[in-house]
Image (tube, rainbow over the protein chains, first blue to last red):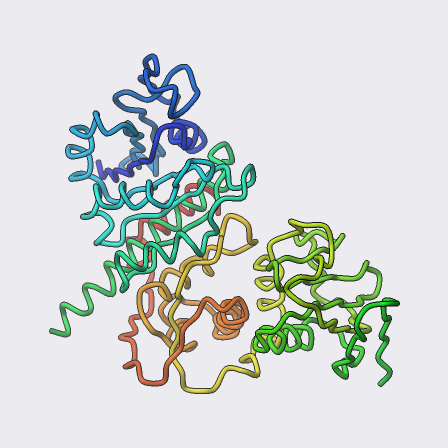
Length: 188
Length: 218
């Protein structure tokens, strides 16, 4: 069976679990535990190991959706999953103290996915607070990788239509990038 | 042709831009492009038959209109246009935050020039995105999304973009017009021709994008 692994990353409280719930066709497997960092995100539980959902494409193919822990102390999970991942949806909450810095820190952790164009940024809670503009996020990304244009969208992780758009934009970008990379290689 | 100009008493005189009564959005797009190029504080007020005035405050990259963009009137009859000089310190044209101007520019750009190049785009140029538009907030097709994935990764001409994605050239041009009006395209005549491989039935089958799109009913 063909499988495509998509990671959902980002700081605690950005909406990773909710985003997977919006997309998954199976009941999402959630592993949560008490949140010991309520000074960062005021929710009673947070993702500790993994959230897992699926989208089936026919009988022989599926998209596996993995939500991985936002806290740095679980970064051993990141190393395992990023090797298998086709792409990553990085969610950041606009009302965090410095969402752009948080985005850049996750980008650095997942640099190999970023460098192959497999990242889309979703900015959640942008309708709640007047945080940085999408242009501010794009400008920061351009400084770290001037030759790449990473899609940055506002998202409501509860909105299935929006999350499908984010996922499809990620796949479209990965495939186009691969196609143009392949052409360059052939030309050489 | 007469141009309706309603001035607000006590405020700086509005200036008619010689805006004729027109159907559609081409002249409106030209007016917006002209104001954006000015880089000086100017407000715009558009009068459209059967709709309330459309107000644009460029300083705040915002607009106000009672007509929702979900029912954007493609064949709107424009009866007048006012430009109103303002200043950085002047109060906003309407209560902020208003609506994000990008949403209006997207609709305006897609629905103007009838699929021909916008007048400000010289021939024989290639384009590339400087950033993606906020697709979760703009009505779009999957083909437009695919075209933006091309534009995000390489310089292409309008015809190359159409061939690469299997789109009609007029649809590709509408997208280029919109992205250009939103000022998120860079363009050059110096970029080499893109290697164009038109999609075949086989490549479409191999595309996860195509299969997932079909699975999600899009």
